[in-house]
Length: 335
Image 1 (cartoon, rainbow, N blue to C red):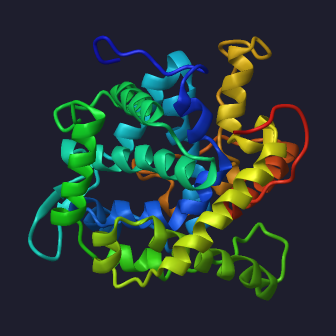
Image 2: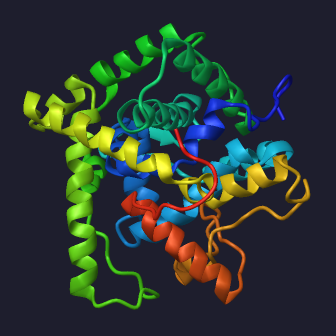
């Protein structure tokens, strides 16, 4: 663990928001904004199998990513695990530019988009944030980033400096590349383990991706939206804000057990003493693992095997998380 680094805990705003299922509404946004960074987009084009199995790829990756926030004393180990997945992702892009996923600027950009995912989800779907809360979340994102053991050189010194950093990246460095266009046009193939007719599956996920593309257009900074050739009107903005308010109101009845990702739920239970502090970390369901021909590659997280009951529960959570829809029941009300 980096000197002076300590993991985030249940008193943090990051714990409250990062594992919230509502972040799933910005799936197209975060996929596109990450890939617009030239080095990151090149790595995705050359090494990712996202288009081959997007549902499984996203679902399993979320578990260790959540762990860097929610794994407590094990968060730095989870961060090192993620760092290791990126060690062999390198090459030269179509423009002759060399790239490496562990370039500090590239690695931090990915982290910055996760931080902004929290900011934008809270702004549009959770009732908004005060200026003090944004500054607190910025400080927490620095603490969170230390868990990766990466160079802190690219990290802005303050929330104000971060806003300048984000604006500069959007204006000067982001580009519409092949990896970005693939996100905009992505199709979710029906996984082999889903017992549902393919036409019904397509009817479920095609509108969802279209809705996320519309949300992404509204959430993009105007300069990025213009570069992507997306149309956005004052009427669209009103509709998005009204939709966000409806989502916020609907989630007042959703307890944390269904609002949060399983890795986050387990973390709260450990913090409350309902689970042992050293309880095994929640892993992705084994059937969400990478294809057999890819499992020996160091860039892939391969989840451990689980019981049939665990598999069923994880599948339900994953499906509704990606659709950003959950049933309401229970104990703790969301913000």
